[in-house]
Length: 518
Image (cartoon, rainbow, N blue to C red; front, side):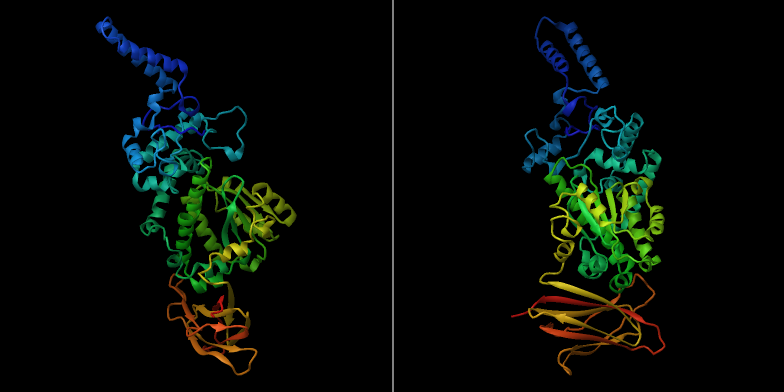
């Protein structure tokens, strides 16, 4: 499975390990060459016999799926690519480009077939080296169609780039539709259309531009992160829906912003991690991730239709455009009520994908399971490992110079206030986000010294349409003139500008802490 051979589009498939021919084949070719170069004595009949021998030999080789060594060289079938790679200094000793430039992961057709007599493990079904005769036939047909259509259709299939390898990329799509050719083609066509608009924007390389807000503020409302790798080499992804604040997310971004950010993560974060792992370890072939879904703190009240809509849309994008990219999902700290929610979510995803999900309630058991999948030096300490905890990892994504951040969600009807501490070596910036169209007036006072006011009467009001979920919300930096230095206890207060009998409006108050200026 590790052999690198020319594309099966360029020549007939190879036989044997690493594309080598049998010694008898080499001997036959040697004999033919000597006969052909014998000068006089052979005449026309010898030449005819030689041609017939070569033709017969090549026919037998092709039928057997084997080729002479020269036929397997990269230069033979990719002269322009090999020359370009060599000129760029990226070619290996045999003329192939380096792994980064041309690791196509192509398999000989015989090596795609099941290589053993044992029953295939369900999690290995549909992978190269585990295919049935009919599945190989479907693979060949799909491969040829991908090359025939090219352009966006091909880019969709190789969503993480060709470094993933032909066989591994194609079988991801084939597994997702159980090797039913027409269904696979339909899926790729739909995914191509789904990718079209994000693709026009290069899948939003700037996360802040995608969200319309600093991603670190967004992450506080829905903590998600990559932390090390599993034993399989797959990135370890941790999501914490138990800390999800849909109201907070709506104060800072839009539904479209959330979807744009998801495209950014998949194409510019997750994809880059897969490629980096492949470059580091050429034997890493399954472009997937191990997911930990932490439901600690999740309440039934959080599982709203708005929250489910966000999760459903992201799930649809992943299932359609990035099929078979989840190796395993471990759901930890599972509350009892989640069983009903899981039955709902389970209906949105492929049954094979759902079969990779494990729900574990008790810490003792989920820690043991995670240690089976992830080495201790890769597993965060708050999940039983020895790597840095997830809060420290998340903090690394904060804007330059920031040492910590507090976000506080307020529902203001008439008045609301909260006290925050500033350390002796810190200074703080206060920013307020909202969609409230009535607005509130914000002030910041010194809790320790009565009568001392840092900021007085700053209006925060959204001037747009409060019901348009795709219209950017409003944000105001309350401490626009200067940050407030510690040590201090500050009281942030909001006075609503709406009538006494009006409904409450939602505000997200964000405190960004920085080292105290000298």
